[in-house]
Length: 449
Image (cartoon, rainbow, N blue to C red; front, side, top):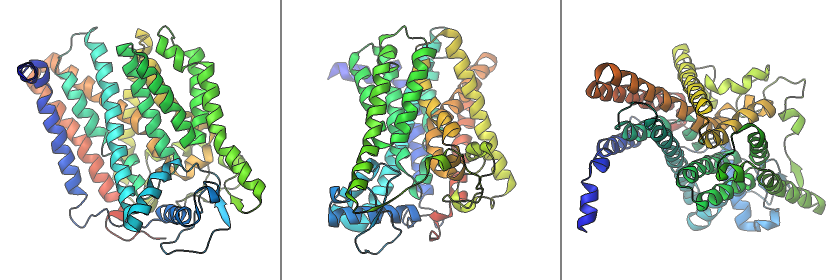
């Protein structure tokens, strides 16, 4: 007991205390804002959520495997007759917790799970960014003259820029199977980084399991992760055993194999002839179509391949084209700032041949590859796809804030570097909260269907 008290009073632990308090303050302010000035998380009757509700209700009444584990995907708050048509484009792993919640608590339990899943996603993403940022900063402290308090500041900055991310909280109304797989991919990246630091095989195995689970959760993400692993197999330094284990042909084949499970299931359901299967054409989703008229959740026209990155200036389905120009400009500038931070990070990791280049690539390459390949889908669903970019964008912002702190420390010392660095970090936090509150009217008004 005495040893434990001594550890709590050690300078290393006390260094993190004020930054931990800052995290708690930001968490309290964010939760307060969600229930202030007419805002509430009770208005979640969006088309996406109603489709999920109909699916879990159909599974509960008819049996999950009776429907082949596929979603009925009809937009209705009230019970409907048994479905004759099923949606085949998405895996359903991410909806399984909602099924159990519905069986335990009915419709209220279902919507409680919708809220809980977004809170868990925000916490997981913030933890991943915190782990990666801390490990990257620790590595730099061995190479350059920088203040030790950066290790605590980095954790505060990671939470402040990640937890209120619009890409996460927009999932209250619109999400799909890539949301769960994005979380699993992020956790796989963090566990791989922990394995590189600790040199323990447990973390390597856990990273592999998380990657495979992500492939089961979203087969499209599984195929793209396989491409990422294959590119890393030939394009990344592979001195470390953990990197060789993850970025390998066996992992590539495992990801492709587990991704194929969904399509095998769809084929078996189709062979029974009991249901009409509905889904999107792969050629359309890849952009090989002459059509430009909007077919996605938002009323967007698919006019250019550049629109795959349209989420950097427009995400909210209901407010696309309706926000003041300065809000869209600020949104764009924040993402450009994050992109600059990512460029600095990759340049640093590449020049040093850092082993952490592998986990950072693992979480950054898939959303980029997705935007290049599945072009039309991303262009017409910016609010849904944004979650895949949460960790890379947040990492970029954290790197920018870290560079700011280092520059201020060299010129003005500890006190002003802490004050000004914390100030700018808080502004990043506040701006994201404000944007979410203003650009997502579902917090205050019934969602149109």
